[in-house]
Image 1 (cartoon, rainbow, N blue to C red):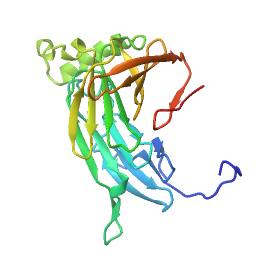
Image 2 (spheres, helix red, strand yellow):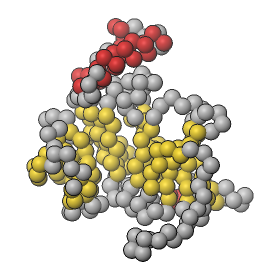
Image 3 (cartoon, helix red, strand yellow):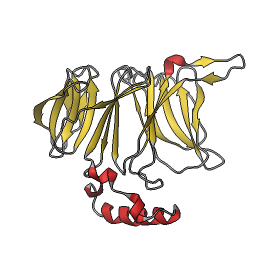
Image 4 (cartoon, rainbow, N blue to C red):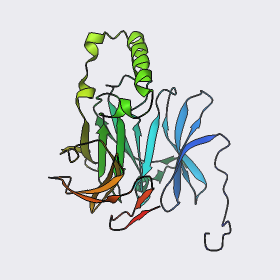
Length: 264
């Protein structure tokens, strides 16, 4: 309790090492990854009030990194494959998975289960993948940024080329067949509707690489490389962009409705 600064209760979660922990807004759930005896991770959902857990996904081997984000109302968890993972060819297809907490149910033998929705995305090269759900998770904005990936870190381009050559050899891929499709595109924007499994292409709104911050009813907030904060309204149809203010280095926090901004 942040008012009394006292611990209300404690619950044992897991004897294994937990990583990639994501706490749902409201604190009722949190998700985490944990290693199994087979040295392959599994994604687990823990119910804080009940002190119980349910495995959402199991991997046969640990080859690819995943990112996670909760909707602001704490009812939906989204996961997707990282776009900068060198363990896979960059043109491999990937997916955005939605786990719906409102579908949580228990069978006659006491086993918990949760429904999930998987929306397939096309691969297009190494990229930064941004997945931002709205407040209740009914809409999800996705941006795949290709243009500055190889220049975003010092020495990354050299590492990328070395890893690329290695993967090509392991997968018997010829240089002529590799292609540069991903490098020709600056970015792609999508709007996903998990309930209907719909995927809509969104018109480009930025002339330079950007970092999406928050997707709200007011619109999409994003930052440019020089730290300026922008608001792109009506991104589903024809985006209209307004420059707000310069926010170099501070952390930006935006409420779920998008009408209050906080930064440090």
